[in-house]
Image 1: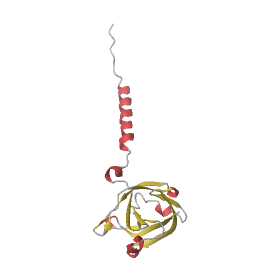
Image 2: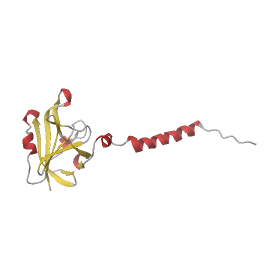
Image 3: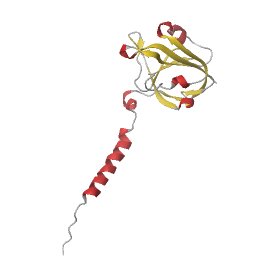
Image 4: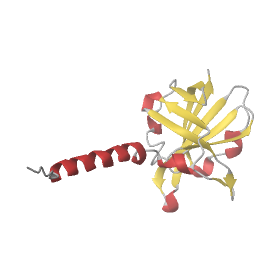
Length: 163
């Protein structure tokens, strides 16, 4: 008597499903930015459940190139770093940060000391980027009404000083 094995279509489907699902978990859920940007440090704001990689950004035609879904860092002077990101992605909940909240950036802990909402035309980048005595970060994102080209009428800024 000869035994013939018949492949059950349900077993094939379920097996294929688990193989594809495992591949998706391993490869598909990786941050898209990891391949596109070199991650230089990490930023965490526990009060808004934010953890993100940070890449260094450069000035291009008088503007800082903002990463799509992670934060960017720019340092021009001693003890001062500007962190930028989009309000529609990485900093979508930044407006929920409060005075006194703790922020961890590049392995250091900072305390939020200032929150500002300013018209874009009134933002003084020279003032924002000037050096400080203590290690300071300023996190800035768009706020207010959205304009054509992905910009906005205002900026929201969070200033934090190292503990």
